[in-house]
Image 1 (cartoon, rainbow, N blue to C red):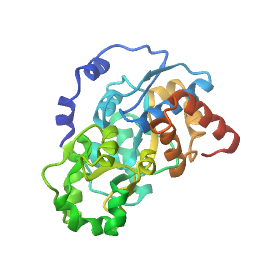
Image 2 (cartoon, rainbow, N blue to C red; image 1 turned 30 degrees about the vertical axis):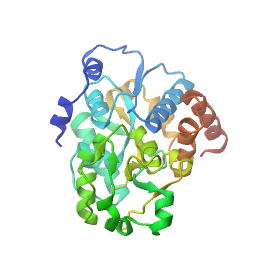
Image 3 (tube, rainbow, N blue to C red; image 1 turned 60 degrees about the horizontal axis):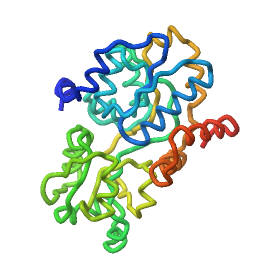
Image 4 (tube, rainbow, N blue to C red; image 1 turned 90 degrees about the horizontal axis):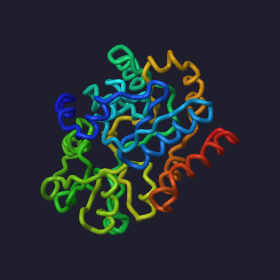
Amino acid sequence: MRLCTWVKRLTPLVLVLISCGRDGEKIVVGSKNFTESVLLGEIVAQQLERHGLEVDRRFNLGGTFICHSAMVAGQLDTYIEYTGTAHSAILELATVKDPARVRTVVDSVYRERWGIIWARPLGFNNTFAMLIRGEEARRLGLETLSDAAPYASQWRLGAGYEFIERADGYHGLIAEYGMSFAGQPLEMDLGLTYRALAEGRVDMIAGNATDGQIAALDLFHLQDDRGYFPPYEAIPLVRSEVLERYPVITEVLGALAGAITDSGMIHLNRQVDVDGRDVREVVREFLITVSDTGQL
């Protein structure tokens, strides 16, 4: 689905966000509408505040295209995006496996086309994770997507809207692995897919590899043995106008580079989604740990 079509699907709330005025004295930090994105938005917000900058939080805005449109419209100043998502979904480019090349391409195009700068990677790669119930994986002896392909015709797939429509999502996956499912994918909010799988309402979901619910619900991540999915490195995006106004942001966000490992992001997500902890408190503890040790 092309970007112009996505923009037409923006909710009225976000259309208001994009069209309304803003306080130019505050740095507007956004997030998508799932736990990890909110956590990352809060990390950026608190990191900026720790260095004396004023912040306006606008979290849970929706999916990739909503946040991207808000950035282009100048109503968001920064949010965390994933390289493979930008490369495949926003720029609609063919899949590239090399992380450094993907970073170079997205930074170059975003900088030239929209005046949006990619900062340094946070350190983890949150790829799509095709998940099944752990008991099913053990019973059938499944480890990879190729192993699972012969069983897919008996399974119902659940996924978020973006995965179903994106070029690096559903249609490419079934073509790559020769899969067919029992009926059309069940579209649902990403955060609801994990529980739906655990409770047997669907049999496979497209989740996130760094989600804390995977282990907690005894779900199994099928290995992408054909390397279908591109790299999805998490990186802060910042409008160049904001960096010109507040050049210290480069250094402030640079201090987060490499600070979060894959397991560290899983730990952060689990504290919120499984343990029920407050996002702001989790982030405060994280930033203290990073200050002390340099990495989580």
